[in-house]
Length: 179
Ligand code: PRP
Ligand code: MN
Ligand code: MG
Image 1 (cartoon, rainbow, N blue to C red):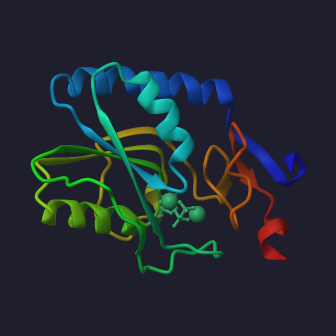
Image 2: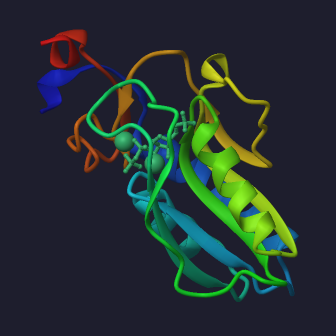
């Protein structure tokens, strides 16, 4: 598996330090608001788990599974809800947790859905951002790292469902997805 990684972009230690920094800032900004923190499955599951431990104010969590990529390296542009939230977002301060923003299609769809369900506020935190790939106008409220336009995996991000368990983020060797 390690052999499929061309280059490590951010190490486990660098990611953990950034998550702590984001958690500290979110703890200040969400004080007294009891946010509903939504993990966008599957990719965000590791970031979500580390991030909520770094947030020191009361909060609630829920999960939503959406998929636009399937087995491909290209977004299909069609976002499907595979699993919806268990609770209502009406009147809630919602914090969406994403692993990466690429085209922005997944999040713009999700923000739309949550606003239509009358969330009080919708805030986005992403660990990784690839602004070069954006096709819709969307800026995260909080972000960890800006990435180059390379196919990256690890820390929740997959290629064909693999590599999510790597504790770092790295660039996949092209031969892996070109074969
Ligand atoms: C990936 C990633 C983001 C989304 C970003 O999810 O986890 O959710 O794509 O791309 P976008 O900005 O172009 O929409 P994916 O659809 O691969 O599902 P997964 O999280 O289950 O891997
Ligand atoms: Mn995802
Ligand atoms: Mg994926």
